[in-house]
Image 1: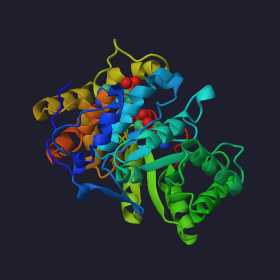
Image 2: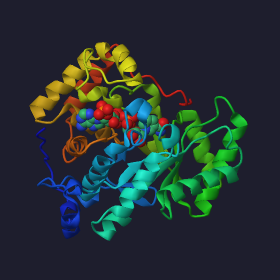
Image 3: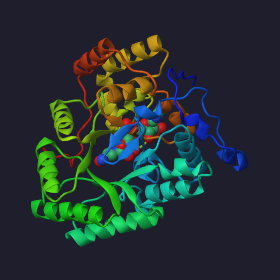
Length: 367
Ligand SMILES: NC(=O)c1ccc[n+]([C@@H]2O[C@H](COP(=O)([O-])OP(=O)(O)OC[C@H]3O[C@@H](n4cnc5c(N)ncnc54)[C@H](OP(=O)(O)O)[C@@H]3O)[C@@H](O)[C@H]2O)c1
């Protein structure tokens, strides 16, 4: 895959001699031109992050993503490529990983950080955004703080960048919700996390938790929701407006529609497992959108994935595409350093509205 990077970044100086001491399987060749300038980093609470992060749900998930431990070397190369090119935001969760592999995504991230041989400053600037599941047995603030301590232990790091509440229990167990919010407050006050965020919160719940935390002296730095050309309904736009008015960063998860917006899947070429079943229901109704993405990509000499990710950036969000290989990370890095025009944004949004199918919403998403 050939990808073009249009604008420069200051990060290639990070490519260090230490790379030469790595086994050849862990070495990489940085692209020739930088991807974004330092001042194009985005403020999230007290931290500065790259305009795009990478998601690691697949790292440890056999059921949905076909993870195998044999992939770990490739994942480590993917991680190294990302940070050497200025990506410093990584999203994970304590629930990521299936069966005996639960927590594997956090473990791998911790291992990759420890084993990174580049500049210390690059390593120190990494921001891990992890999510703590609102499991029914996490009923007290102390239990939520313990969840945070377990994540720190799995990653073997001293502090988490963004500690996020994975979902709200407002729909099915409202009394639990307050304990979890107090848990966020406690982990922030203890310095276990630099900032706190939420995930799968709808507009109403977002305002509620923001106000609650504010009253306790804790700023809410981020809100993570499914946000993409396949998931851009009224709720998403309302959440974005609320985020803007309250100074919260919106982090877009599944910006590639779990892979559907890459253009590589078709009704006759579906991924294995549950994703294949889901895609078979949605892809046949995506022609207007996929055609529009393809047309813009060809005209711009970009790829469909780059167009989908760039759309999220142009909407003022921080996308966190999931990556499983160096090739995918390289391609997704090419979403940085340029911007779709306002006409192209309109064309894509029109095509998305014309497409009869949408992504299904997360069952934990609240109003
Ligand atoms: N808060 C939440 O509840 C929540 C929910 C979902 C996700 N997330 C976070 O958001 C992150 C991203 O979302 P996601 O992983 O669900 O979906 P996504 O980013 O929409 O899609 C990622 C998948 O698309 C494929 N892909 C990525 N780049 C590609 C490229 N350049 N070319 C071809 N294929 C490519 C890969 O899968 P294949 O190679 O298998 O096709 C990859 O795993 C997650 O990793 C996770 O950190 C959070």
